[in-house]
Length: 378
Image (tube, rainbow, N blue to C red; front, top):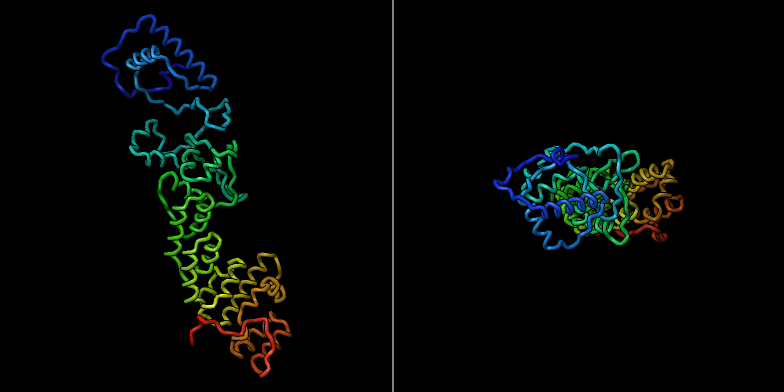
């Protein structure tokens, strides 16, 4: 196909052309044949060019007309570790407004703008990610170079010693919206966080070791921290090993423990966080509220395990966490009218705790008998 069909002119012709002699024409003809044959084979080695050819090429450049492709041609140079396949039908890229114009580069004067145009764009993409759990996946195109310059994990994945030649990479443990937030930061240097996805974004930032994005997520969580989400954020901060966020969560939970324990998110925390809350010495909360919170969490855990939420199963899923609730520090009325009648405690435990309240010779109990230091006088 003639070059004029692939390219359109964007610069005027030079005012004067050099007339090449016969030797120059022969040299140019040989050079063109070599280039065409090399491109056809898909292998363009980098070799020194003789000075005689440099002079010829210099003369040839004076005759060149600057052109712009009417459509984006495939590069003859294969990317490292990428297997190129040929297809009878042309590759159809998803139309992107930023790069629909064949001269889109001219309208973006900065590197940041040009990189941003490549965000979530199949143009020149050399890898695709299938992100999300089964049945809820989204295919996201990307460019290895951009990802590798922003994340050591991506660098090892694409250019490290154990790099794999995969055209599609499955990421089932990440939400598509969070993955797109990560890519937007890597391509555009722009961070846009939302309350519904900030925890998922923090997870993906930790997964791919992008500390600045992770720090932005933590800052966002700290500013939006309330008693209603403190327990859930405490669980996540422990998971992500974020001590600053963890400390802020504890401050809120200590001061507003009753509200934190009654929040919807409390029943979704993990067992380790549950135990750390129940063992907390500085909670400003009545023990009856902790006991009720334990039962609410146990009910949700039974549902998660497909168990019937009976008193026996609730006690089963609570395990040793129940022994961190300081039941003997309740008032006698709270224990007799509520805790003792819910069926969670064994008959022997109930008797022993009653004796603890009334007898001079108190039996040994498996529950702490000292009130929490953080409990303020009511």
